[in-house]
Structures are given as structure tokens and as C-alpha cells.
Amino acid sequence: MNGSKSYDPNGSIVSYNWSQLSGPSVVIENSESIIAKFIVPEINRTSNFVFQLKVTDNEGESSTDYVNVKIEIKGGYTPYDIQFSRERGSGDDCYPSEFEGQNVEVTGIVTAVRPDKDYPNFFFQDPDKRKWAGIFIYINEGYNSPDVGDMITLKGDIAEYYGMTEMKNISSTTILSSDNAIEPVQLEAKLVSGSCSEWAEPYEGMLVRLINLVVSKTSDKDGRWIASDITGSELLIIIYLLVIGLNLN
Image 1 (cartoon, rainbow, N blue to C red):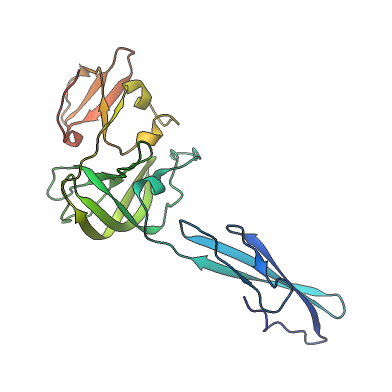
Image 2 (cartoon, helix red, strand yellow):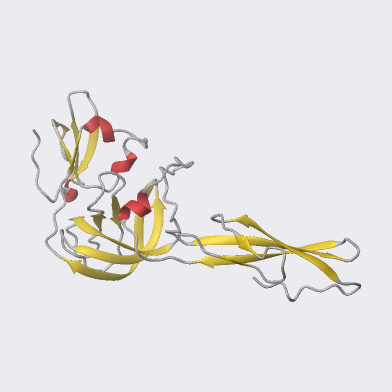
């Protein structure tokens, strides 16, 4: 960071002081010199570092200016990195991704593909995590979707849609391997029934196996139906997402 263009038309600058205003904390080297520097810490997402330079002249008057340093990291992510969140959010939010609005590369294994030749939206998942591991992929018309079991790297935008984290505007798809398997997480309906909750949200977008379900309402014109367990917890089931098979036991 360089403050050499600082000047005083009526006197001389006698001191420089650099300080950090925001971003991951760093140690500023030579913070009282014209030129200062810092070492970028280990970060796993695009980060902005904002610094202030305060200069003081020989009459004690001071002025400030600011430097913004943006470090972009767009690759090396998994769905877990994108999904994990501690904040509930507000309005329609439901634990929104901290990566919302960013264009990133994410790697995971495809767990379900919608059987629609025009809009084959799909889900993919981090094979090493049991929570916060899945994400929905919204694609544009004409996209050539991967197959269930493909490990892929996608490049696209992270967005929130009525409380659901999704990846869209996919600009590249790289298939790394095929025929990979992910074991479903076994859950009871009460864990994921109802609206946004801290116990249900970690399973958003994930491949799960729900046990002890009974069909309580038959399919409607859109292929949706309701199932419930012995506690009365109900789930809306969308048929096209059942890619492994249907077995209510």
C-alpha cells in the first residue's frame, strides 16, 4: 500500500498511519511509513480488506484516505462450503449462504436429476459430509445435464430463492469421474417437516432416506403427494426427485 502521492500544499507531512477497517484481521508491516504491506491470511472465500491512511502535517492538521484490496477465490469449494451457515437471516431467508451473489467453482457428486429434457435441474452433494452437504442446481434451457453418480465441477452463481440456496447461470461443467455412490442420510420425518428450522436446514438439498412413512394424501395433478409418520409430521413429496426408488417402511 503506497501513500507517496500524499501532499500538503502549505507545509509538509510529518507522519503516516495505516490502520485496518474491515476484512479478515491482518498485521500491517511498516504501519507508520509511506509504504506499508500485509500478508494475506489463509482464507477460503473472496474477501475485501479495507485500510485507512491518516497523514498529519507539521501544523497538526490531518487528512485520511482509504485503500480497498479485494482477494478473489473462485475455486476449490464443495457444496458444504457453500451451504454451511449459522445465521437464520430475515424475511424469506432460511440460513442463506455467505456466498450469495458470488461466482464460484464447486465440486460434488450428482445425487438426483430431474427427467426433463428442457430443464434437467439437479442436486449434487459433498460425499464427505452428513449435514449442509447438498445444493440445488438450476439450469438454463438446453443444458446437457450430468448423470447421477458423476463427480463434477461446476462454475456458476450462488443465489437464494425463497429460502433455498441454489447455484444457477452455470457457465462450465467438468465431469471428473462417474458411477460414484453416496449413502443416503437416514432421517425421521419430524426432523425435516415444517418451515425453516435449525434442525431441518442442514439437510436441504441432500440425499436422504425417510423411515416409517405412510401416504396420507394422494398425488395431485403436479405429481405431488403427502406422507406422514406416526407422530403426524407431514412431508410434501415431489415424485421426480425420487430417483433411487420408493420404499415406505
